[in-house]
Structures are given as structure tokens and as C-alpha cells.
Length: 204
Image (cartoon, rainbow, N blue to C red):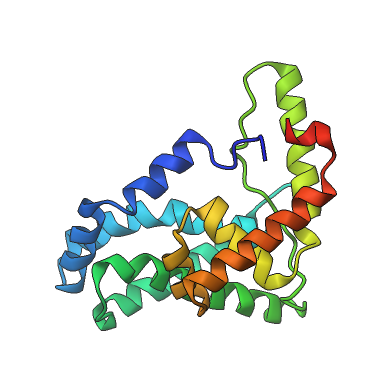
């Protein structure tokens, strides 16, 4: 799609989470370095919040429920660091695995079928600074939210992780329990469905 899915700030967030410095933080945190743990959470919290907002969406005009779930995820990850025994490069998919379970718990508590969550595209679509372009961006954002809601749950989850969160196919596969090939196939089919629903003008 022609709109930028991630803002420059979001791109920076996720690039940092794939850096060698992040992997070093994970290693130090696993060894009990409390300063490293604090820095680690400073780095991952924005990504967790973004994930929760994309899966849970707004209640009215606020993201309060999504942000509450993000806090639960942070606490769960904090409690799991000492038990984490995999490679530092696998830590981010591990975090999103926890996040997926917490989002599912949220829908169960709310009495809603988690297979039909409120799709929501986080703020950050950037089509320019003019008022006209901002209006276009808001309209497109609403359109994307409606389109995401038409996808099957697994398709929506994979698009969120790949395009909004910024995970690789391998990282996404680890998070959702599929092979990288299955992730790519599912992503391709989901995008094809979205592409078929868009008008030509929306793909310029």
C-alpha cells in the first residue's frame, strides 16, 4: 500500500530492537544486571504498546485497555527474564508470544471472542504535513482498520507482526508457531485480499 505503515519513530524503535546492543542488553538482563533490565524495558515498552494498540484498538477515543494490557505484558516479561534460556536473538519473538497470550486473555476477560478483535492501525501513517494530507491519512487509516477486520485472525496477526510491529518472517514464525514459509504464504494471501478490496486510487 502506498501509505507508510510505520512512522520514522516506529522504524527507529524496531531497528533498535534488532541491533547488537539490544541483544547485549538481553544477555546482561538474563545474568541479573538490574540496570540492563531497566534499559531493556525502556526499549521494548513502546513496541509492546504499539502491538497492543494494533490488536485491541481504542475504546472510544482512548487506548486505556490496550495500554493496561501492555503493562501486564511488561510485568510478565519481567518475571520471565530469569527463566529465559534461549538465544538473545530469539528474545523479541518470545516477548510477542507472551503478548499474544495476554491479548487473548484480555478478550476472554471481556467476554469477547478473540477471533474477532477490534482491528486498529496505530498512529504513524504519514502522508505529509498539510491539513489536506492529514485528512487523507485519517481516512485511509479508517479504511485500513475496516479492511484488517475482514481478515482471518491468523492473517491479521501475521500482518500486524510483519508490517506494524516489524518482525522478520522467522521472528513472526517463532511468535505464532508456524514455519517462515507458512508466514510468508499467509502474509501474501492476506495482502492479496486487502489489495483486491482497495480501489485503484488507494494504491497510487
